Length: 375
Image (cartoon, rainbow, N blue to C red; front, side, top):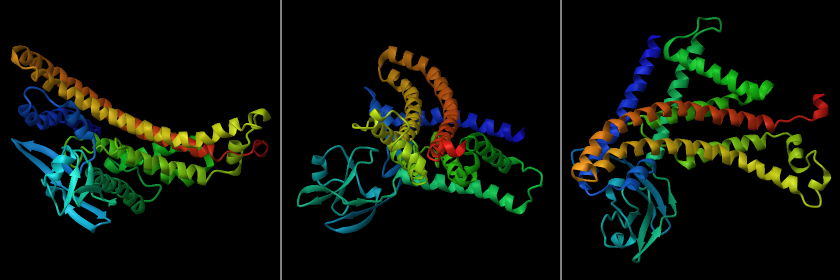
């Protein structure tokens, strides 16, 4: 009970800190734009990738973590620079003016937008050939992967030092063991049956990785705050892994059902209607996994920030009416933000659970046996 109370207290602190941190980060922007605020810049500046990590603002001075930019140009070879050597501009005209120049390279974008690295070649801005920079998303990925390893290896260390008949672990290790058994027995085993042990390592990795990434994404202060699962590249890679496992390990009966299923012959020849639909379904399953996780997490971040921006929209109206509306909407916005953050904690778990369960179901569907053999 003590550990549960501590966990609940931490969740409440995170939910209270989220709108407060958002208020502090947007205060400077509001002071600079008293006639109005750029909601698009605020919303998408938070959820998009960037070559730097804007942490907060202290007065009028932004606290920014500049990240290494590693890229290859076919005109000048490999380069390793810091994002502090660049300046972001809205268009190519200001870039050609010579501002923000770093060895002939520029970032073609604005504010926190990741943009593209371009090179000035004889007065023309040419995109670089290969970009493997350590962006904010990449750094968040490394941090979350390290946290995942620490969580799992801590529990694995207890298993190595204890026997199967030892008393159940307590505290954090007990929580990890309980979660592993819950995912194993309630999500993976019902779908895969006898093949559970074969695919459990991958599915458990998916669950814990997505869950940790989602939780870290709603923590409003570093090393949290990264929108990793709100980046479609990350969810696409996870869905691609499931896609490869499903189709590489699929049985011959699985492929037979796709190309020559047990349906009336006129649905297969002369026009292969059902084979085409079944083959198209191979790709819709991972796409559904990718879009579901990406859209839900991105929407949660955008809604939470939008609720906080209500305050600044009201104050931006100016005059007595703007001040009155801003004062009235401030507590409402904070309460709505807290409620949204509490909901986001639940969504973090649900999305990890849904991705894991659907992946297990798709794998089991690819291991279909012949009906006569089962009889």
